[in-house]
Length: 48
Picture 1 (cartoon, rainbow, N blue to C red):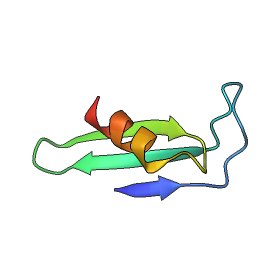
Picture 2: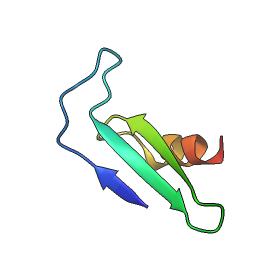
Picture 3: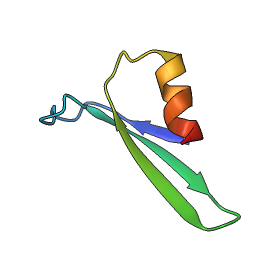
Picture 4: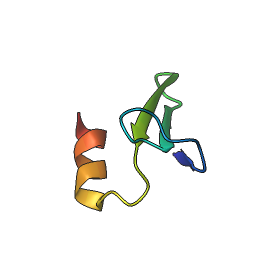
């Protein structure tokens, strides 16, 4: 799990990417988000 921050803002207002890598299934997820979003929103994004 890693966060890529400091990116320019997109049209939807996202300015960071949350990278989640699963080495067991050899898959990765890239979730765009806004810096400063609450942990509840990030947890909901992770569960989807």
